[in-house]
Image 1 (cartoon, each protein chain N blue to C red):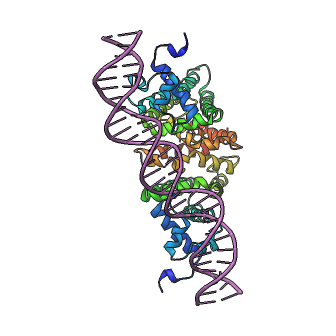
Image 2 (cartoon, chains in turn brown, red, cyan, green; image 1 turned 90 degrees about the horizontal axis):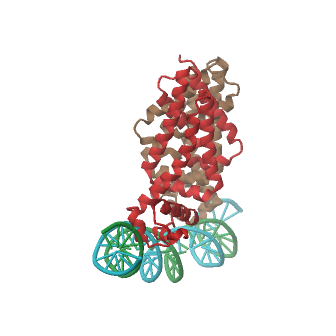
Length: 199
Length: 199
DNA sequence: GGAATGACAGATATTGAAATCTGTCAGCTG
DNA sequence: CAGCTGACAGATTTCAATATCTGTCATTCC
């Protein structure tokens, strides 16, 4: 039984949508294109997603969630010390973004456009990431490795201070020479700030 | 003698160009428009600026330099302690950018487009700013307020870690509620990182 | 009867012909 | 004669006609 004759599910529509986005880019990817790729009428796609915006939102959420899930593993590695986990988590986030941007620049540019449109989904994603970071900082505060009065605020500050290394609006800078040294310098400074005894 | 009959100078062309940019935006501001605003033929403008790109570059440089000059005063206030000067400098940079963005959003968007095109000018501007920051960090290292092995590298790290509060690509976030608290949290963390004794 | 279709109205995007712009330069002007 | 002009060729932008798309829904199909 060829894939095209399987039942039409939201998941299959999302896969086709990502493929169409990869091929055509964000501006030219239409619901009709997605339907054509699946061999169905566009009316059928509207049975699963109320609007084109909802479809774009769902496919973007899927894309963002793939990153969050990979990072969650580092948060939960409680055998490692918090500073190590913090550094690994930030490095993994940077590496993940950089690979997405480098491996398929068209698709990355596409999703950058989509995330610009979709405030809500991105906000949730950022909340998930700072939540993960908060858990690491709290672990450090508990073990005495970090001295911070408010772990959640500190986690947000760390996330924002490293935005150059994960926010898509800085993607062009990720291929510049010396970027890895710059990343390390910022992370070192932040870790020193978290570790220093409160004055 | 009305202004339009004064000698045509590079300075007068730059003033007219800024006015045309404010009125028409970056996409629609043509050399012909600038010439019309000055009451001369567009050929005369080309006598002072070889290309349209050169004119845009000059007017952008002028705009960026106005910011650098205002900050230079803080760097040279050597009666104040380095931590205070660092905090003031970062706050002044944020305030300057935020006012530019808030007071005349059209013009700010225009210059954001221009700076995206003009890699060289922006690079110089950033070099000037990190240079100012390096002088403050060096003063702190000399007085013992900061403990850093490489002041220039530390200054770059501080500049990059605060990019959310000065890079135009984050301008939309500058009106969000709580942005001032976030700015303070990041700066506090960085100052703690600079101040902590090396381990 | 639940899922899919395709015709349809209004909104949006594409296209190519016409208008405008950039950059040059021979000649005018004071 | 130094500075300005305006006509020009080729590149770019505008605009309106045309085509395509979004979202709905009465109808068909299994």
